[in-house]
Length: 243
Image 1 (cartoon, one colour):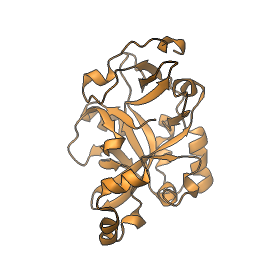
Image 2 (cartoon, rainbow, N blue to C red):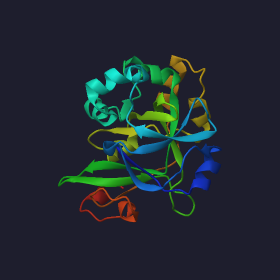
Image 3 (cartoon, rainbow, N blue to C red):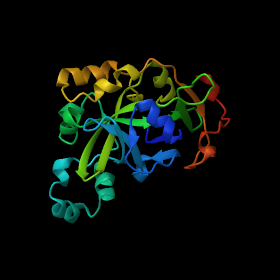
Image 4 (tube, one colour):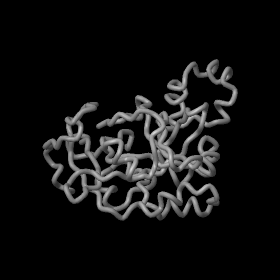
């Protein structure tokens, strides 16, 4: 469920869309995989004019404060993420969860993407699908997913994707989990990065902030391709039942 995204847009297009510059080298990817703790491109409340890479999976700052203790206990960041499963944070509950509450209150970010992958359960099997917002030419538009992050060193970040209960469309697409990433309305992106938001205002973004732009969905091949094959349409029996 939303553990893989794409970001294949050109560097200058991303910079122009979000009015921000990249801190480090950027490489487009057809499939960024949370289970591999790939790095996402984020914009933080600390600097809304800079795009920084962040490990996908949140390591709370207080957990990492004593690095010696952290590595004695977990051995590596990857192992911590494997055990604690912080790739996603449920928007409805993250304000009340020890692992997420501090970041939710003061460390919010935008996760940049132009598509994401989900699973649809058919009568026969689980079908991977690609979800995107088409532009006039049919290609995927850039969008921002609400996120929370931690800063664990100089220019070192980790992050978690905020999810919410699926709307009508995505409850049909993601028909088992019935959840979706919180893709923010473009008009609300700047507000999500407002450091002065209080708890009630943050929950308003979570409950009401999903974009009103129309998504399109189509089935793709099973596998972990990080090339054009990842987003090539694939035919499965029964898929047309809901699109």
